[in-house]
Length: 417
Image (cartoon, rainbow, N blue to C red; front, side, top):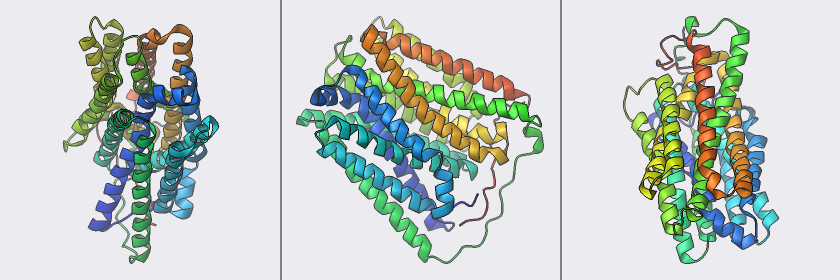
C-alpha cells in the first residue's frame, strides 16, 4: 500500500500529527455526547429508552459503509482528501442534528456521523500502526478519550442553557475547522516538491510470525472478536451510565454528567499515561491486566454499597480499559504478520464499530425489558466476554511470540505518495 503522508519534512510531520490528534478528539466527542444527551433527545422526539440503540445502529451502518473501503479510498485519492471528505460528512451530520425536527432525519444524521467516523478511525489507525509510530498511536487514542470526556461536559452545558442542540452546534464548528485543516494540508502537500524516499523500517523477524496459516486465521477471528467485545463494553458502559445514574441512582443531570466525565476522563488519563513514556509497558501485559481490572471495576459498579463506591467503580473501569485498544492494534502485526496486518487492522476497526453499536443496542433492549437496574450485570457480563476472548487470543499466539509481544514492530508500508 502507498501511504499518503501529510509531510515527510519536520513541518509537514507536525501538521499531520496535530491534525490526527485533533481528528481523534472530534471522533470521540459524539461518543461522549450521545449517552448524556439521550434523556433530553428522547423527550424531544417522544422516543422510548431503547431507541438509543437505533441511533447507535445507524452510526454503525454508516461506519461499515466506509471503514472496510477506507484503505482503497486512501490509495485512490490520498489520505488528506479522504479525511477532508470525512470532516464534511461529520459537519453535515452535526448541522442536521442542530436543525431538524424529524426523528427520521436524526437517524439519517447518525448514519452520516458514522460514515465520517469510519474513515477517520480506520484510516488513521491503519496508517499510524503500519508506519510503526506506536507512541503516536497511543496518543491518538488518548485524544479520542479527550473527546469522549469533553462530550458530557459540552452536553451538560447545553442542557443548562435549556436545550441539547447547542452541543451539536459545537461539534459542527469543530468538524468545519478539521475539514479546513485537512484541505489546507492536502493543498500544501500538492504544492510541495516530492520528497526523497525514506528508508524502509525494519520488518519483524520471521520467528515472530507463525508458519501455520490455520493459526493465522484463528488468530484473526479471535482478534476480531476481542475488538468487537472490547468496544462493546467501552461504549455500553459510557453510553448507558447517565441513564442509569439519573434513573435508579437518582442523580441530577449535572451529577450524572460529572460521573460520566469521570469515566471518560479516566480512560483518557490512562491512555496518555501509557503514551508519554519512551519505553511503555509491553502491549500484551497491558491487555492482560487491563481486562482483569475491568472485571474488578464492573464488579464494584454492581456491588455499590454507596454512591462513592459506584463512582469509583466507573472510574476504575475507564482507567483499566484505557490501554487495551491501542495495545491490541500494536500487537496485530506481530500476531498475524506484516503482510496481513494492513487488511486485518481494517477488519478489527470495523468489528470495533459494530461491537460498540450492537452490544450497546442489545443492552438498551435488556434495560427496556428488565429495567435500568440491569445496567451493572450487563456490563459485568460484557467484561467477562472481553477477558475470556483476550485470554484465548493471548494463549493462541504466545507460542509465536514468547516474549509477550512487548517489542514494537515497525512495518514498512511503501514509499510516500
